[in-house]
Structures are given as C-alpha cells and as structure tokens.
Length: 565
Image 1: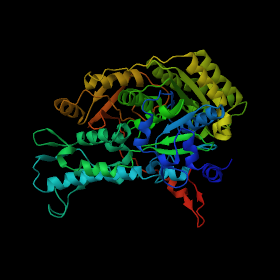
Image 2: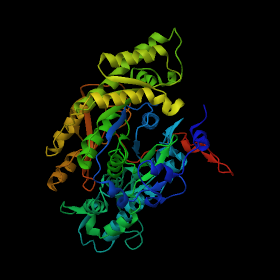
Image 3: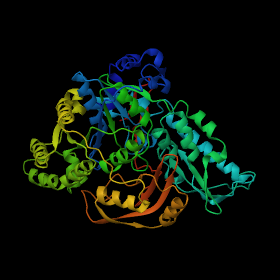
Image 4: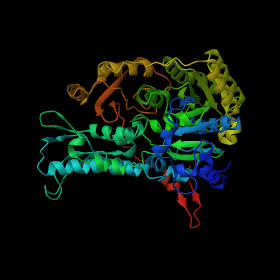
C-alpha cells in the first residue's frame, strides 16, 4: 500500500468553498489560507446559533500501545462512511503538534484512505494557530519577567513564579532552566523556570474552551502567573498585557475548515494534549459543527481514561453539550499487547501452531477494553466498539473479539477504513446509527465540582483508573493548600497522567486493580477553569526518541514530500 503522504498528494479533492457549501457557508463567509483550507469567523458562525444541534459521536480508544489503535483514522473513516450513506456529517478534530510530528508519533491526520486534507499543512504550520499561542504565552512570560526586573510593585516572589515558557517542539533539555543571568539590567532576576510544549500551555487550553473573544479575554485575565511573598496569587491581568495577547490570538480563535479525502467537511481547531491538558478540539468548533451538520464526530485524545474522561467532565461542563454515543476503537494486536504479547510479535501474522498462544494473549487483553467500556457506561452513554482490522489479524482472532463483545452485551463492528476509506466503515456506521436510534444517552458526571480537591482526584483514580487509593508527594500537599486558600478549589480536575497505561506507571499494561496513584504536584489553571494534578513521572515537555521521525522526513526540489506519515 502507498505511504499516507503519497495517497494524500495524489488525492483528487475539491476547493474549500465547495466543501463549505455542504454546510451552508458561502465563499464570502470564509477567510482563505490557500485553495484547500480556510478559517470561518465567529461572526459568521453566530448566524447559526439558534439551530437545533445534531447528534454528537465521541470517538475514543483502548490504552495506547506501539501497535496502534487507529482512533483518528477511524473517526475520519466513520465520517466518510456516513457521507457515503447520504448523511450530513462533520468532524471536529484537534490540530497536531509539531513536537510529536518530528518525534515518535508522526502526524495526526488519519492515514491510508481515511485522512483529512491537506495533511502536510495540517501536520506542520497549518494556519499559524500554534505559533499564535506560543507568542501569547511567551509575551505574558516576558511581561512577568520585566515586571520583577524593575520595581516589582506586585511583590512577586521569584521563587514562586509558576508561568514558564513554551515552544512547539520536543526539547527535554529545556524542562528545567535558570533564567535572569547576567545582572538585573541585562538579564533580570535569576530564578528557576521551565519550558513546556505549546500544547501544554494553559493558553492552548483556554483557546480550546473559550466561547468567544469576550470569554477568551476574561479567561486570559484569570491566569495565575505567580505568588507574592505572602502567598497571594498574582493574575495575568495585573501585568496589563491581556489586550496584546488577545490581538495575537484574534485569528487563532476562529476554527479551521478542511476536508476528508472523500469530501466531508471538518473543523480542525486547537490542540491541547490529552495526557497533560484536556485533549479535545475546541468548544467553538464542536458547538458550531453541531449547528451545521446532523451528525458530528469528535475525538478525545489517547484512551478513554484521558481524553474522553476530560471531554465529559470538563468540555461538556463548559460547552453545554453531551455525546449521544461513544465509539471505542480497539485492534487485535493492541489487545494482545495488553494481554502480554511481546511487541516484537505485533507485526507477525500467527501461524496455526502459534494461534492458540495469540488467542490466549487476546483473551487476557480484553481486560483493558472492558475497563474502558465500563468507564463510559458509568457516564450513562451507549457504547460501540470499532475493531480496526490490520493485515496481521486472523479471522479466528477477529471472530473471538466479536464474540467477546456480544458476551458483554456491547455492539461492535469491524473497520477497514485505512485500506478502504469510507467503504470500509459502512458496517461501523450502520451500527452507530442503530445505537443512536435504539439507545438513549442518560449522561451524568461522576463528581460534583464543589467537592474537596482530594476527593475529586480520588473519584477519578478509583472509578476510572481502578486504583484503590491516592498518595501525595513533593509539592502536591502545599499546592492544594495554596489553591484552597485562593478560593479556586471548586473546579473540575484535569489529570496529567501517562497515556501508555491506565495506571500512572507506563510499563503496566491491561487493567491493573487496587494500585496506588501518586500525585507529586498540583497546578492551577484558573483561566482554563480546571486543576491539574501531575501524577507519576509525567512530563509537560516531551523528549525526542533515539531515532526521531524528523530523520525520515524530506522534501525535494519539486516540492514532493516524503516520510511525513
């Protein structure tokens, strides 16, 4: 099969104004970024404010493995399948981050014959939204450092500055730094600082959760950047640069319109990480997609314990909408890894002699799938399992998966959207439509935001992760005390946790029970409107692997791109 980038470069797609017509937008409603991508201004979208919402389908997955589950490709393929069935459908997806594109993950625009277009632009600079977030974040940091270098009239304690700097690249060497060297006039006041990746910036989360420019301004003003010598929080509005930050973000707040390879419209907007931030597309993109289409597919980052849980507890609370059903993506080879199969076996098709061992691994791996199904049902949501088929899967393994889903009374369907595009998602689409028709969501939250911080954390740890308790180390106890003292504790929780395990230990597969979650630090994101406990060894600045994806990416003198998959 051809590489993803070649499939995309050879695709026959429509000008973006033709895609816009499918959702009731004219050429004059768009701000063009070339022939195939455009922004839709908020003032245009507000015309549709009073329209009835379509059906919302949340796509999530089992816990990530190196085998790949195919969550984004399934989301896009499902949209293409619904389009083939004559349904008015739209996607609402996140923008990819440059760090993972050049690191381990690669692009995040689907794959094979289920992609969004133009994948090379979306994976790279796109319409400049991430650069705008980086600039706004670093402007606030510069104004903060400038303030303490001069008279420091706000009485800021340099040892309690919590607002670092960001860049949209994996750079482990910048995780902990010393700034302000060279004397007060040349460098400012020396103190420890850090770089986070841009998608971990609170401004990225704010942009994804803001409802309009007024809301954006208010949220930026509430950001806590530091604490005074007597322990009082200092908010961004005190530094008088909110107007300038809003100016930097004036275009980034508008969602980006692109298309699938089969011509379905897609909003791609904002990109908060799901293992660090809340991991979902913007409220603006999802809200207005629901006004423009009868069916909207959105995707929570990583597995159901991360992006989906945060979508339900944070995005739905703030956005005022709720899913009508959840699709959980799984693959045979990923389930086998959760059941103990060595990763070295994942690209091998088992022989008849090897098959019993593979079926045993598969049986053990169901525990991870079952836990995520259980979690989504706790929210009162109907669940469909999408079994993403790979060439190494045997008929016996696929049949075993389907029988397991029947046994636990969950609808399931095979998917071959990677190789077959929308045609390969028709079975899944039919099952999703049947679920929407026959099962009504009874959506509910698992915790009240007014509960104490530790109680909210424990509910997520025990109900979603399967832990038996939570322990607090490092600065976490004092962090919680400071948040409570500031009166900011009545907010939802946004757990920062490894995506490689349902626990806080990336090496544990399956669905361990009765373990203990470790919280080492707790950060306040007052502007975004949530509290972030950092668990285990999670980092807010990723590092590059030994062989980064960047080493395989190139472009020739004719503009032909290779290696960007």
